[in-house]
Image (cartoon, rainbow, N blue to C red; front, side):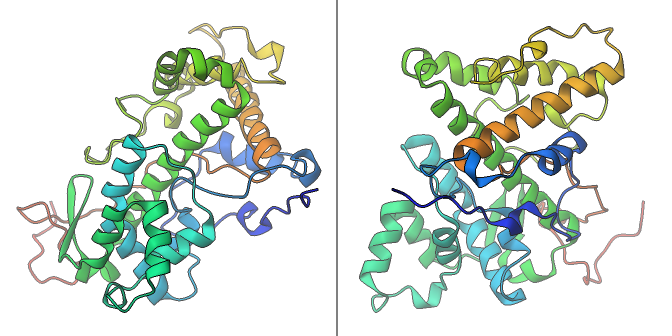
Length: 320
């Protein structure tokens, strides 16, 4: 018999780092209130794994040098990995494997590098992604911004926060789909496109769950909206999706009217979010990666070619 899953308690704790995007209150509360009893998951819970690196890797690395290497390698690999997710049947990756992949040093990946390790990496991440890791470009594209790899150590808090927000966003979307697939597999086997479209409706402006070159959003959308009345539409879409899951609370099945009191909207949001988080924990044996608000927009200076100018540059324009 498989040993009982022992969740990583460190991942239950809040990450105290200024680059972590602001939490969304209902989701933050759900992480605190979820029942974290490993016995709920049972002995057959899958290994902890993620479709994207856990954001904690980039703030809890063994050293600043290690964290910088993780960041560099992720930015180099990001577009290729998202493309692979969109075109192949890819399984989530264990944290240990993510760390090993992101910790690769380009100069060491040569003909003398362990062929077994390269083969293992190619099997998981694809040969094209491993090839990219062996190259050392001077600049890399993150959404609509070009970043200098040489200046990654000096990027501001807001820019790193956007990179981490992107990881929270993608992880949440893929985890939601993964959980839905295992809880209601019949809806995917017979109506896969319809079900995927239902998931997409929860995320405004995301025509594909894997978009990687769209401009970074300037304001919170969908589930991240602050005003309950404007967020209501997207929360109801999430509620409609999870309504088919085992254990769904019957009192959540009643639609909320546009005139519903803010307190009522808030109460429903708390219940739906907690139901999602608890369902995820009960199946996978660990907490999900939850969505977060867009980082506060600190003043960031861009050159005419849309490249970020290091804050130490003497070429900064005067404040406007």
